[in-house]
Length: 304
Length: 276
Image (tube, rainbow over all chains, first blue to last red; front, side, top):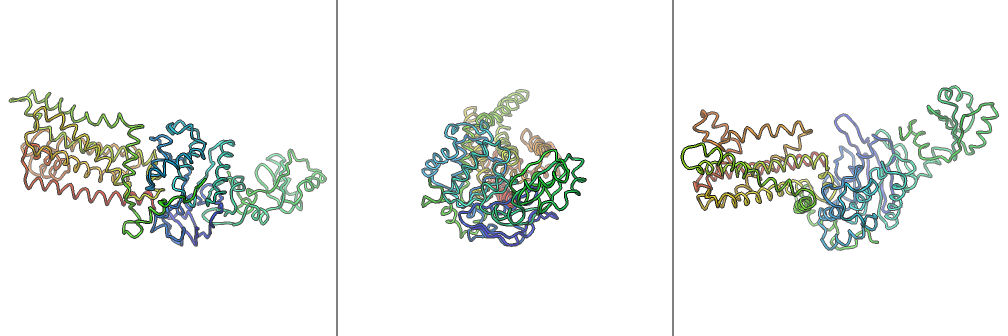
């Protein structure tokens, strides 16, 4: 549905997106994972046909977004990073007016609104002004609004940033349902758990470039071990202790506050460490995540 | 639940109807939906601000026309009659400028309204025309309201005066289309104050309250005559007093040019801001 090749966007001297290639297939949930400033949002804007590329190719549903902006946007649902709901309108009016922007017929929109208010669990708030909504409700309203034109592709830019855990889970559940009915999702996020939960396939971006591509499981398999042992020796001692840990695990990652030991079996590595006579202050064995993949690829954490 | 394409009139089908038009990238033919949005916002949020705009020229008329007019020799209403057309022209300008600067600025930077509109199948020209259309509608309603007040006072002396209503809309159109483009350059409230800094002297010296040809040397008169408010005031004054001629046509032409230039300019700016 979306094909990008050597896609580039520069602002003056600054290269926001640096010649990336990717493809999004119908019905899949595609993620763009990366830290702030990686070029995720810029990529998203180009897909949304609201930002013209500097060079390279971008084809969305067979059309060029630089030439057929309004037409392509009719296919898309956009959920921007900030909730750009219309604060001068009520919840219901927000949906209605947005539908009219697409030129949809009144009868169609009225029916659709009921469906979407149910979907977004906002029936009770239909006549409220948007200032009275909680953060999670606003986000759901923004998603409902993005669905008014029955889009084939829904673009979500950092969909759960700033939401509390409960609101996040409600939102993830709603997005799953959309996937089930065949909506193609394109999601940017800097949360690895979100990417693991929602994305069939993702690209890891850093400094405008794509570092890796695959399903979350593939990426973890390729770039990390099955398990990770996290040990803390106190911030001051980590560097020193790391020297003694040489040879333990497949690979070590020394962070300011802890040491990560990559291995197929974390408990076994911990035993080895204890046998060496080292006493970690705390230790934890967990499964590898996309965070580890990102660390491996860039040498930096996702959330800094 | 059917999220995808359940109807014949899908958003895509609607958008594709204009696919072959040269303006397909910037115009979807739906500025009406932007107008409609403003009606809902009026109903839900902005009624007071809009109603207050009607009183501005009426209050000026009572204060300057009848108040200051009473100090002058002759009939007290003569001065009111002199400044009345200017007040109509000025309120058309102020309404249009207020809508296309403060309101547009707010929608652009705080409401991020245009960003939302541009992520639908609307184009920048739809947004520009819709917002300007709204300013005109307001201008039209104010002009009609003003006429309803001043006509019974006996201040309108010619049937041409009726044409002052469309003239006010034309004036508003000119100012709104340029104003919206100018606003797109402004980045903060301090810069917004520059708009007032330009408008106030223009209001004071464009012949609203006195005959500029008697008050100032020729070269200053020429400068004033090049300004849009003088053109507006002369246009309305001519119509109200029945002094209609080639000059009237000249003033109309002035605004037609201003509108076209303003629209091209504003559409370019909106494209640059939201689609680059």
